[in-house]
Image 1 (cartoon, rainbow, N blue to C red):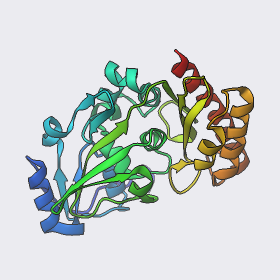
Image 2 (cartoon, helix red, strand yellow):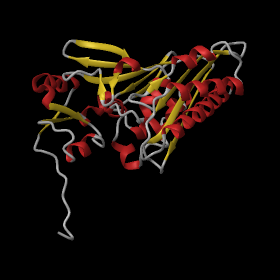
Image 3 (cartoon, rainbow, N blue to C red):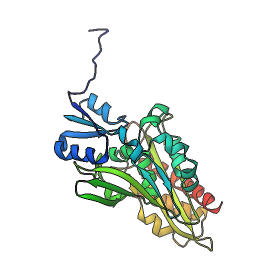
Image 4 (cartoon, helix red, strand yellow):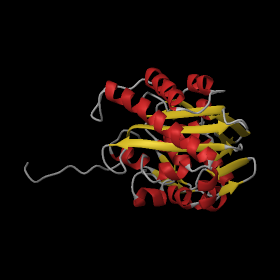
Length: 296
């Protein structure tokens, strides 16, 4: 009938509010796969409203922000709690000094409402192939600390993302921290092409460069998003660039590898060929900027 609209509401669920990490793990252990953690909820709740995801219990972990919302910059690593919010990542000058790639990415993530409530851990655990911070953490060779009833374990980003919307975090486990190694003479950067401000990426790329004392490339990493079923790291680029002098020719080589190595599909955001072109171009841009930052 004209003028009528359907209201999207989630299926009924029970609500629990955790007051400690151990309590949250205990609830997950007791409730199993019928429960899901919620912090920002910007990805989970719309999926529940559309009945694409149904859970009998939601465990609110926002009260754990005092325990898991932190940025600790050390001389050899940066440790970020999983409940650190996008706004905190954006506004941290210490983090931007160590890894400016985070501020690059946060400036193009969603809008202030999402950035005020959304969390780093929630972004990684959503495991969306187009997600920005997954590409950032892949680029920086980050590790993820997962805690459960059997203790803690640490996995790489490659191990963390098992598949689209699937991670290594078990039903009774919580991602509690992200650890990123620091090395001297480094620079990093992030670029994203989107249809409109704050949208999911058409393609995005992060790059990190580490320079040797003689100015050659000691190591390099590139992470791409929105070009396949998983956020993509490209070891071939690292192997190709090591030992080279930073140059447009080197960036061109890396761009060609990026375009060849990714696996985009044609959709409403663009054709496969267009996305491969963007993977090439954004890889060159981010490597160029990463080197400029490493030299400065």
